[in-house]
Amino acid sequence: MSRPTKPKHLRDRGGGSGNESRDGDFVGKEHPTYFKFKGKKPEVELIRNCEKGRRCRIDFETDVNNGYFGRDTNPGQMDVKVLQGILPEAKLDHSVSLWNGYAHVTLTFPEESIIGDEITLNFIVNDDIIQEPFVNTARLHIIMKRPHQGGRGKRGQKGGKGNNKLGPAGIALPKIQKIREEQWPEYNFDKFSSCRVIKDEDAEGQPTYEFYVNADNLYLQNEKVKGNDAPELVETKFVFATVLFGLGLIKSFNDEKQNPVENSSEKPDGDTVEDYVDRTTKALAPFILPIISYFGELSDQELVAATEGGLEE
View 1 (spheres, rainbow, N blue to C red):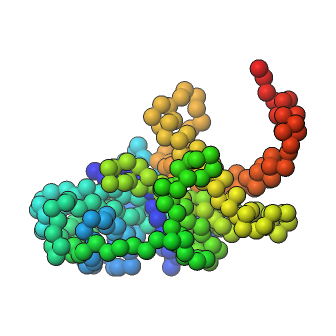
View 2: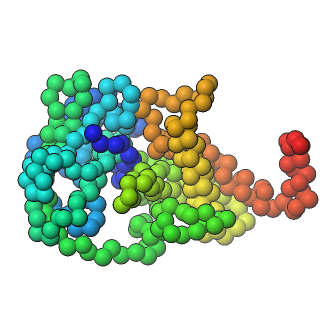
View 3: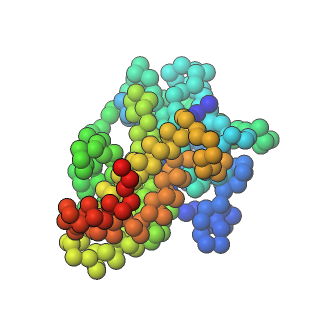
């Protein structure tokens, strides 16, 4: 059974699928009525290349809700079965993420894989309620690993901030990507959205997080126009403050899951860390820059005076 993680490249599907509420938000079903390769008709085979030494991601479309693979009641299960190549009948290491009608399965091939190998897989989605599992077949060709381009990129392009960068106070930053207004549909953003995280795993199976920050957030744009700082500086403050908030929320969410506290605030069934960060940073967005601006302008004496009233020895 796969371990649910988070999604990438979130796009409103439209087309009368019945998955959107009247305000345009995705509304998933409790159990899927379809689960197919992205952009393909049901039961159509997928053929693609995967690089040796890199994880391979396969994208799917579905109409089930975001918590399907992680909820406590009647959860879904994604199995990956090898039909041909590597070790037939074996189950390949994989993780699955699900968000707003798009599922992403990340595969890890064994080191023994050989360039030129063809691997045939069945992706099987099932639960205790649906009558028949959804089965999708893919033929994957192992090719030579190709170097990926880094760099910061231009406006609208994917950036290159990696996990080895240090941010404020020497904190190691995750990968961060700025999202512009023209990219909002792809990530299901609106003018109030602040941040979305995508959970993944590194080569050792440890969780990693990729941050997508709305660089055209309404409150950020207002501050660029009305504030005294250079627009580039304002944007940088917003991005890093949002990411730091997000990192704190992730830690809080994971700590609470590992050590649930009696009478702690309950989260909806199947709520994920991605949902939690998305929802909370959206609520915090109007206050991030005012807080930074207010405390940044205070002298040491004013800062002490402003905080003394709420502090107890």
